[in-house]
Image (cartoon, rainbow, N blue to C red; front, top):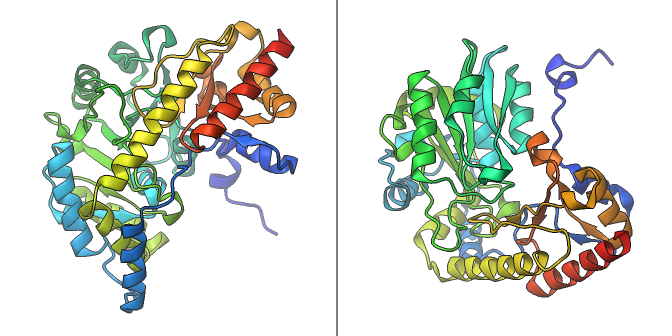
Length: 388
């Protein structure tokens, strides 16, 4: 075999951390809290719409950018929920948010361009930047300040090669939901330095305690420089469906379509009918999923904070808690590996999300039922007693 392309050999970013280690173990007694998958089943009316589309013969090629009815429904949702005025021609339906971020990074980032990420970061964005030939530039946020966006730190990271800022809001892994003031500060930096922003908003509906999600594209001066990415993955328990969408400035859409049309042609036709049902159908199942997520968050964080040496802030959004375990005097990766090996609970090390996450672990409460959450915490408590 001839040598692999450098875009592969030079890509060092991780993707699945402790999930891969757990899978390689072959153990069937593990409680999995490392992977951000929903626990709920996809609501029945979404499945029914997809089955009906199949039976109606909607099995052939369709619009490259996505079904027109779905894109119109997305525009209505963006106006109603996100404060974004977007035409159907500015929307592309994607194979999950991951596909949307890949298209945006590939369309804008040239070899040598620098892309700023807020750290702790979502590692999969790193891999896409490197595949495009870009240079990831993490900007560490301070745990002591609640991982608040630091405009001065962003400014300090900018060079003549800076091209893009990657934003994840609500934030995986920290559970932060950024305030309007924080987003305005980031927007001011982007405008001042003529930077593109790609905004990963997959957790937009999973909010707690009155937190309010704001799409940065809705702020002054940002619609023309932001690609905003969403998915049905978390809120509608549709992770395996691989269905998302992006909204972009009209001038950027031909470039984005050049990527999506060449890598997937278009998203599965009948699955898009399920997405349409999700946006236009009964919202009661969505509310039930969100209520269950809140109950599990409350149980997990309350019990974590009762354990010796553990400090856990209350996540404002997402399906993750990010407790500080530094009191146990070991690197986060070692803590996570020992917790899996000795207690059978799989969590992700905070350092997986960059050095700013060291001393923490990310625990996904969204992937389990509430009884399993309790069982996992019982195991964690026993592990902590044993290690003292």
